[in-house]
Length: 237
Length: 311
Image (cartoon, rainbow over all chains, first blue to last red; front, side):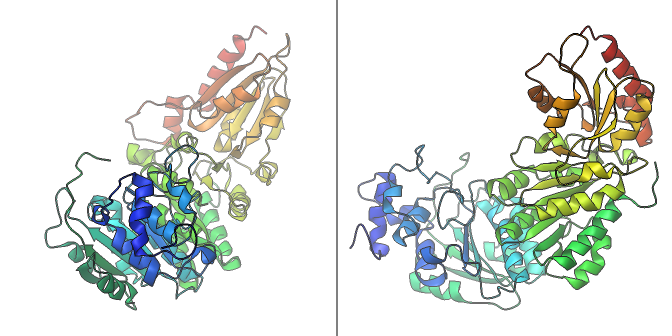
């Protein structure tokens, strides 16, 4: 393990998360998005610190901006910014806040925190790439199952499905935290609008990689990554 | 005043040219005005977009198009464009550092028969809570193409507020790129600044009065150098009195005028649309009377203001 420079791996993530949280023995399972994020940046997305300004880079949009520790740890592990930034995050002088700001964080494609914005923004980015014939470039948006409560997502799901926006992928990290749940399953919300759907184990890297690298010509696709249930965060904003 | 063309038609015509001319331009609609862009949608299916009746999505899509490197124009009826999805404007455009041109139709109360749901006198005041937006308020359809082209060619976000209410003649001097105040008439007792379609009512109201009348079609940024130059010094016998006549919420720009004249004694009178819900239908002209924006109402307010002048 190299703690200052060079390539870092999944095994470095606990150490990086400890920098953020101060917890001595950090449990990776406390971070519902961690495995999805790692697989995306390690095996799926064509983006690196060298290509953050390349118009043809893959775009990852963290819509669920709440609790971005796992996102920051993965970006640091992949060299988008120095590990040292993880210390004293959310202090006045830090570029890293409790919700990410794309203007401040290298590698962050959007600023998020208010729920229900990433997917509609991702539709716009996907349309913009298509209009410039950047057809090999993908847009991947991560949302939470509770975040799907926001109605703006459903405008985006309906429109992207109707127009066959096949450079758009949504990953729903499903920790069953939506206050009223999704009877019939989350995937059904997308499939009725013509999306290709997959429901996978959100902790299994090989399964996630297979699901997230699949392209579905003619339709957008959603990967529902199921993880262990979290305690409901009712009333938390 | 009925003119042979109208602002929305001029907007659509110019936007269609821009789609042809520049592959960075995109238009995003939410059904409203989609008939005017049917030919563009055939020619440029990837850049003339209609998301259906989904205004929040329209604004987020515009933000995303900008992040992908395009120059989007989003367009709808004023309340649905500016008020319905204000957080989308704040976050998906402003906070993302995206740059979008917003173009509204309907103004404060073009559609008086449609009632409150289709009226948005607070639009400019609302956008004033955000940094960075240019605001253009054309007073004549012939002013729309230049303002739209200027806004789209720039790299900041802009809001263009179209209306069915128009002046009899365009004022080309006010739609140059630097957005300067066009001096229509010179006088000595006060500066009366008319914004967009308020110019003709202001000219009618101030007939025979010894006042300067200025015309602004760009209000953000407001030409404060001209305000300073055209207002008096505040010395005895040279009152720095400014009457602002805006076709949206009264007082929207008074803060800027006060800041511009902070170095001298001055008075401001802010005329515009009131906050009261009128709960009447009828014609826009009837609503002008309610808000005191008809020539007679403006004259009463301006006479009262000038008669209080003790400078």
